[in-house]
Image (cartoon, rainbow, N blue to C red):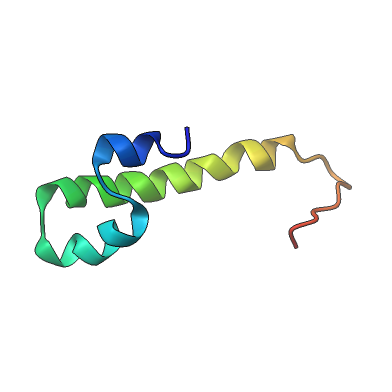
Length: 58
């Protein structure tokens, strides 16, 4: 699933962000969708945590 969005959108995150300066309509849709996906991907991790669990990433 990691690369599916990149393949469908035709951009990876770095070039997509730098290409925003062109104002291409594709990027004006892709970049917000990319950030929404990154935000939503955090949900399942938070839902799996239980009170008292130790977070190894902090």
